[in-house]
Amino acid sequence: MTHTRSDFSAAMIVSVLLHGGVLVAALISWPKAPQQAGTTVPVNIISNATYTDLRAAAQAAQAQMATTEQPVPEAPPEAAIEAPVPDPAPPAPLPA
View (cartoon, rainbow, N blue to C red):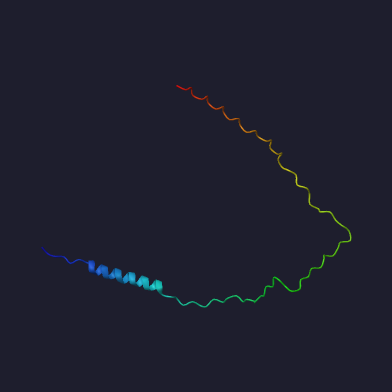
């Protein structure tokens, strides 16, 4: 009987090299052009100022009524539904 040599070791070496190459390619940081960040303007938000303008609004020459219409109900209100009457209790058992 002749002993045939297996290609298992060659296939294992090729597999390890291929997987290692894929891993190295995935970990490479490809050089990119730096992205331009948008310009920003610093803003100070003042919520409680020492001086606030609390003057009354200018009065109109003639008072005007609101121009919105009164809402119209779309459906009539439902009538109250009476609660169902429970069944009467069964009679008590007779003593034996």
